[in-house]
Length: 114
Image 1 (cartoon, rainbow, N blue to C red):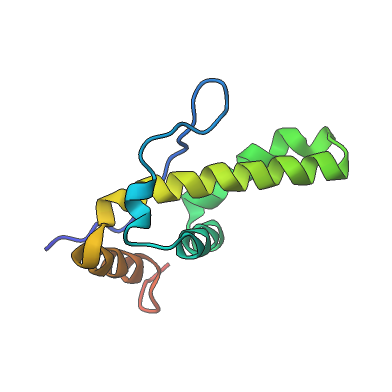
Image 2 (tube, rainbow, N blue to C red):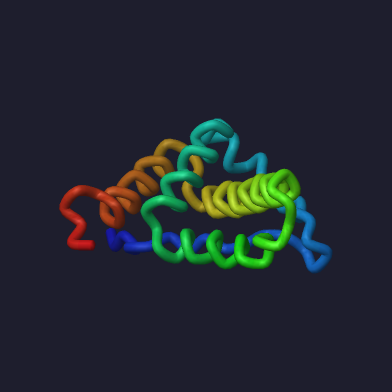
């Protein structure tokens, strides 16, 4: 079986900037919310593309007062986490979780040359 090296995570929100309902609960049949949030943090720390998306989202917020900036960053994290949850729908069930583990190890494991 071919294992892609990098899952594709993308923003999932409408033109009004609000998250869209796309059946996210499907992923929660396999993964608890705390796992989804943890995976989101892993991606933001170890996946260059995810980190860049999140970093670019922060740039326009630099002019806001600290508390407002923090609130906006929290909202951006929630949107990014929703995107991760949406992507996890492709890895549902026991076999899906095993496939996700293989993808993550291939991409971020110790033997990864990056």
